[in-house]
Image (cartoon, rainbow, N blue to C red):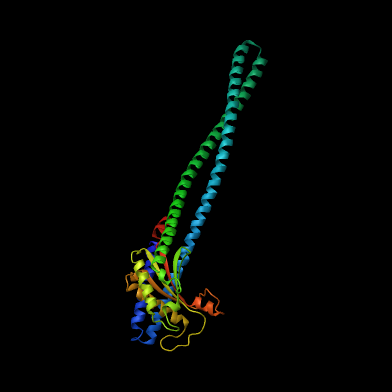
Length: 339
């Protein structure tokens, strides 16, 4: 199964679970509501595991680049080794030719001295035998060196093929990552233009970790301790939906965040985590009712667990009370290459 299909499979159950939880919260027993909420938390963890998997794939990409670098070094060493073997081969060939010439000369001398005494014949015969033995040894050595050279050439050719294949895959990976970065920057520019009116009202847009983050301070969206959207917040979210309608290849996660001040309100909100979930859900409803596909949008509450400011100061707590809309390009092409 493709990783992208698996990730999409997680998102639909989470959205369905959120919708069921919200629609049945007021009319089902508390026990059944708690069970549904636990399933919702499990789905959130699965979504987090998908993020971890993406980071692992990036590490695999870095490992492939390191391997290619090592293979390049190995090829350089094999080429150097092949050069030395070739030199040895040529030297052996020259020596072989010299010995062969000597053998021919001795053979001629043996024929000329055929009429000489037996002692001279024996000496010449011994020389011929010794020469023949050396010649046979050199022939064996030459064959070994030829076989070694051929084997190294085969290894080198095989490494060249593998290296080209890996370089092709690395190039494809780099192209996909470059396209993703370009798409993120283009999306940021598009959103910045659409939401320019809210630049000084607590809305920021940035590209981080391969994603586009639209961060909205709570003063633009909600009243303190509430999860009902302000009119300015609704207007901003409607414009955001309009800017994203044509980007069906982008997954959207809406994360609610709070400061660490304990929630003291009444009603169906129990604590900061509960408040962050309700706020993320309200933002998700506005996005999906204004053109975005529900299957592409996930609501998630983080409570006070991921502060970006110092909760010991009022300005730091204001930064922590935020809603982040995280836009992630679908990486099906990248997953296919890694497979």
